[in-house]
Picture 1 (cartoon, rainbow, N blue to C red):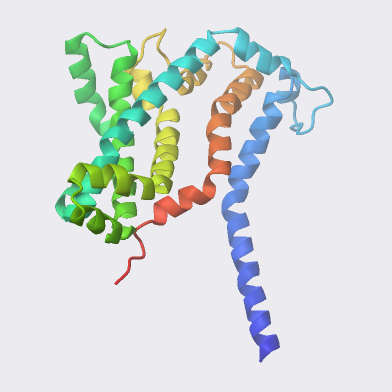
Picture 2 (picture 1 turned 135 degrees about the horizontal axis):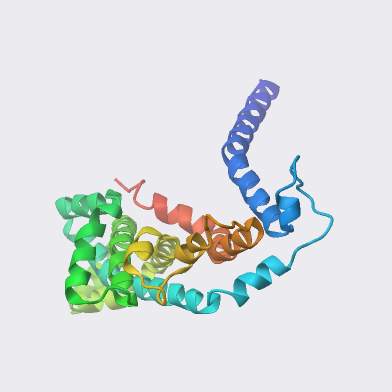
Length: 278
C-alpha cells in the first residue's frame, strides 16, 4: 500500500511537471529565439536553415540601441510614467481597498472588478478627446493619468483581498484605546499590510511598464515610452531583426528580473482573500 501510494504521488508529480513544461516551453522557446536574434548579424538572421548558435556574437546590436533614437531619454520617460502612475495608484488604492474591505462594500468591490476587467482600449477615445481639448496631448501627463486606469483597479483589488484576511483584533484594541480611524489605519493596518502593498506595487509596475496602447496614441515624439520606441523601429523599407530583438530584450529585462525575484509575493497577492477564516 505504501509503495502504491508513493507510486501514485510520483505519477501526479510527473504529470504536473509535464503539464507545466507544456505550458511554459513555448514562452521559453520564443524568449531564447529572441535572445539568439539579438546576438546575430543580419546575415545569420536571414540564413536558411535558421542559425540558432552564431559563430560570431553581434554585440553591436545592443550598442546601436543605446546610441540611436534617444533611447536613454525614452527609458527615462518610461520610468517617470510608470513611477508616477504606481505611486498615485498606491496613494489612492491602499486606503480605498482598506475602506471597502472594512465596510464590506461588496457593490463597490464589484465596480472595481469590472474596471479591472474592462480593456484599457475602451477608455482610449474618451481620454484622447479630453486631453486634446485640454491641450495636453504629446506630454507625459496624459500617459500618467491614462495608466491610472490600469494601476488603480489592480491595487484596490489586491488590497481588498489582503485586508479581508488580516485579523481585526489589533485594530479593535487600538480603537478601544482611543485611536481614531486614521490612526488605526496608519499605525496598525498599514504595517500589517506591507506584504500586500509590495505585491500591489510590483503588479502595478508590470502593467504600467508594458502598456503600449496609451503610449502610441497619447505620446508625442519626445514623450514616447519604451514599448512604443520598439514598435517604431519596425519599418517597411528595412527591418533589422538584431537591433529590434535587442531593444525588445532591454525593455523586457527590468520587468523580467522583477517578476523572477518577486514571483512568490505575486502568487501570494493574487491568491490573497481566496481562503478566509470562518
